[in-house]
Image 1 (cartoon, rainbow, N blue to C red):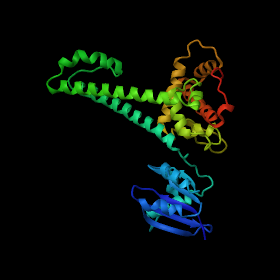
Image 2: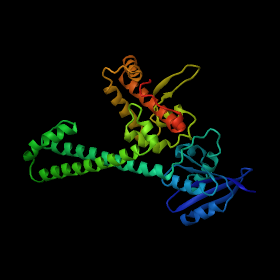
Image 3: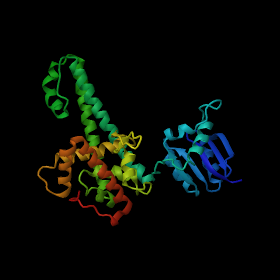
Image 4: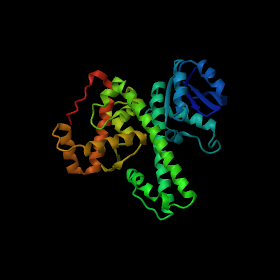
Length: 341
């Protein structure tokens, strides 16, 4: 009988493959497949459903397998765990492949959108830039902690730290002065790298018509627009904008029972980087409201007065996520009105 579903446990060099036929019986069990033999093995099979965990290299393999007519679906590893066999089989690559094969057939399973190569190129820029930002923050924190050992305590704000540190360099003894100077020089180099990546990402956003439409929305700049486009793509993997907001983790967790709805804090599921960009954009919107009287500004101001600052921030971020899906899904058919709420 022909194989209809395959589960592949991905790795660096040795993969596990588990396939079942239309009766649900194992028809292809290969616990050890080398990297160079995996693609020829999949290529010779009739088109079927291939399930994999969304991990390093998963999108690359998904693009390769789709070239041979297969339907590839990626899942978060935590959704596969409940289907893993326990007892004698325990945790091993073969059991993982069988669990993936079982999980991918579940009707209510949630899947990860497969990213094309150009999307991963843009995300590569974002990941690298974000790494430099985190390294810069760590450098300033290290610097602040070191000078505190010599009785020098400066404000946390970077601009204040850089402005006041010069007056205290002569107070540092011995090699401590050299250490602090090297940390400041390293932070300056990171600033230059971050500025360069900001320029590249902004240029890529301006050159893309979809990103330009996203930037029409208050709270979405070049960085956010580029990240949304690279993460969501055409939006075809989501039924509506609410799914996108939930996927990013901007919707409240629900603890309901007995017909009584209890909504808690936001779930913070999904990509924290994308969520942080939308939240920072929403904070910028509230900071720049001033006396603006357009529909969106009146709505945001009223929401902040009624529900408080942070709930207004999350509401604006969630609205932008939902509208971003509509822009990417419908393209020119959907036009944003910056003045609308």
